Length: 419
Ligand code: HGY
Ligand code: MN
Ligand code: MN
Image (cartoon, rainbow, N blue to C red; front, side, top):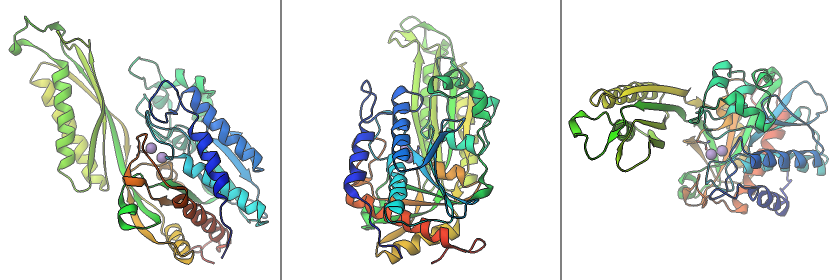
């Protein structure tokens, strides 16, 4: 077993530098995809990859890909995560896994440890939800599940994704053609902060992810009639805002009806926005999550019906669109058990976990064997400026990532990895 330990100061300095590349007009540690600062973030990661000796390129979908050639070649082990954040997000979501993967490359080289496999590091483009209703955009493009309908989707200003991608240096045609050949990938591993409270509560160092949540996103548009707020009697209004608000409450009550299920409305807008005008239009965007695919399907149906009811009783037209429909993803047993054995052998405490957060790993799992390594989040906080993980809590995750790569590399091709 390897006794190589990560260089904490180096990792910490890079995490500080990358996390402070932020949009100064936004709260928290904001580096949203499709923004200039997101380009700077991916460029920074690419510079580090080059310094670590990787041959780098950017694929047609904006994913930064670095390769450390192996002794044998032909087969790959892939590591990766993302550098974009939510608006007002934190410093650790995504970049912990990117910088952790680059640290693994450097540790292998500094300790003259060669792999048979090529080691491929990916900084996935646009993992967090964008204004077009999509998330995990780069990993979806790599797995070939984007199409012209994806490109035609519009934001609330009416601009299409196809019109917007070139601002980030992405050609829409190349975006459609960014499919990666996963037949040569033995496994994909993603290190990530937990983003919830379980590891800290249990006093465990490492989370071994068994399943990643299913996520269904929706956009609902409500079209009513604009009228005077003082002279229009309540019974003749077609108030789009009220239909939208009723839909928000339906999301909450449907989510409360399941086990470990979640429902969130993250956006609501009335048009016009004026206290003395009945809303002509309104929009709501939100999502359901949960570990059970059939519950998610049922939640979709119930919310579509609830929004229709909200509209029908007010004479408001409702258009409901489900923009993503991702089923829960079980991760792959040979990889998850390798991660668990590695943690045990390194003397680290660990727990098996469900991920309520979505990850590029969940998309890549359709193509190759996938495992995820979680490290604790202080107070379980994430997607907020207070998101925090101690350096001493991250380093064990990098050690597990490194040793898992070594075991997968050394495993017989047809069997479960072991060493
Ligand atoms: O939204 C999510 O679950 C992830 O953090 N992108
Ligand atoms: Mn996130
Ligand atoms: Mn993330």
